[in-house]
Amino acid sequence: MFSSNRSEFGPNFVFGAATAAYQIEGGQTGGRGPSIWDTFSATPGNVKNGDTGAVACDHYHRWPEDLDLIRDGGFDGYRFSFAWPRLIPDGTGAVNQAGLDFYDRLIDGMLARGIKPFATLYHWDLPSALQDQGGWMNRDIANWFADYAALVARNFGDRLHATATINEPWCVAFLSHFLGKHAPGHRDVRAAARAMHHVLFAHGTAIGALRAEGAKNLGIVTNLQKCEPASDKPEDQQASDLFDGIFNRWYLDGLYKGQYPADIVKLFAPHLPRGFESDMEVVSAPLDWAGINYYSRSLLRHDPANPGFPAKAVDGPLEKTDIGWEIYPQGLTELLVRVSRDYTKVPLYVTENGMAEVEGADDPRRVGYYDDHLKAVRAAQEQGADVRGYFAWSLLDNYEWAEGYDKRFGIVHVDYATQQRTPKSSYRAFQGLLHNKR
Picture 1 (tube, rainbow, N blue to C red):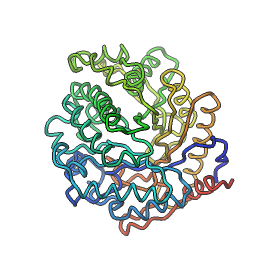
Picture 2: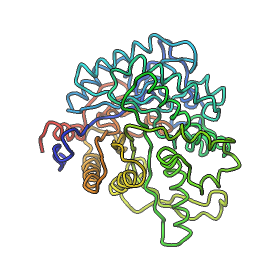
Picture 3: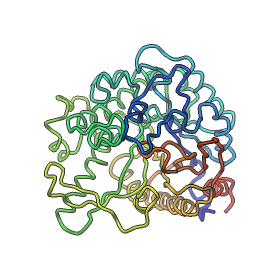
Picture 4: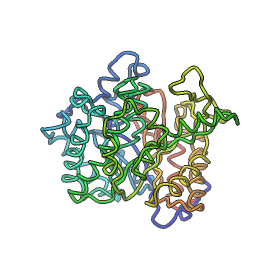
């Protein structure tokens, strides 16, 4: 059980569980178009064991059972994502009625169970037809995404408690276009620089489109990493500052200050879209809330072998999760305080936090992980951060992107052969907390 009490977080604090469409839905029929993750995962060598999201957790058919788990766990909210290619198979143009019908059922099912729908428009499954036109490297994506956002607002906006435009823009841009670890798998500095700007520009155009359709309670979800130097050497501190600039400051400065950090602009200057500065008013459109995903920290060391990007992450000494990430709860406190102090006074939500652990329904390490990170949220609140909610990642064991089905983040175990769901100890711990039991 957790050591915290629900009442400590405030009377309107939202506890939720989170998922993403491609990771759980399956259901790649019924008019759904292909996405970049379908092609990325079908390419040998990109994903462990050649795993794909074709079936995943079969949430497309099993959503009532999954919503029952959320309700029975005592959770207030469910953070889910729409699949762009399920709603608009080619990304633009014709709308898929079967996709609209599925999300109608899903959202109505949440409301019938007293669950607040927290929607994300984009959690990485770009329609393949748009990738054919350059995807996030193409400035036109800002218009494509705005049209998609307007469709969602018209059809579902009055039933959504909150809407985020994009999940983890660093992953959309840098991880996927510079490091090549996620779809579309580019390793190109020009592609990355363009995606780094266009993902935020598209966010801003989507905010405008959502508001024009009357949508309320709008935000974005950034993933933040606590960056620390691997030693007290000045060059390691510089490496940490550089990594922080690319991982954190680029997105926070752009969204909340209307300008990108000068040191990172200088680094990418030859590759950025011409005239990007004129887009910054759109990029920094006012928001109603801010989502923060947090998992770990990075220790950075100067890397003389790479003069263009002289920073290298090294292994730290702390206990690690099954995916190899250090367990560092105080980093969540520090980042929440930093955002509320230096960037914005809108309410903050921890929109993802969790750990990969070995298979099984008994997960005492995960219980401890959540307990410590909930304490970290309370510590941030006590230091003045206006934190209004916390979402566990993830409700279900699921398709963990390039890791395939090898890493399990769920508080509910999924037997992928039978699709049987089994609540884990961590689910029971949340259940105890949320039903006001110690």
